[in-house]
Length: 142
Image (cartoon, rainbow, N blue to C red; front, side, top):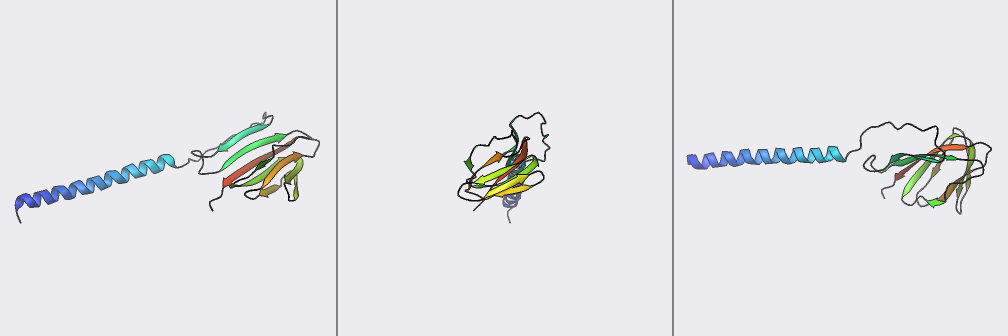
């Protein structure tokens, strides 16, 4: 085989390997930037109504959460969970999760309530002390 042809083939092979490695490095860097990172969020004891905790991308893949404090007799805004499923983790107090056209779930300290996707609901404080809870909502991939 011609020496020039052999040299050209070697150079093309090296160039192909280097290009492939560069593409892999770039893809890896993009993936690392898009991936959420571990973190700690401090709950604020002076929150008067709402404290966002995790706010979705890029902080998480799809999950959102927040700390809510409802005073006695107060309700959160009625809303639909749309394409999210929600979990309510009651820290203190008592109340109800009112499901439109469905059951009313009793909430009290150290309980967890679940709300499926596409469910209209709200939380109401039925007690004499503030109702303090954390909600966690995660997008459902259908």
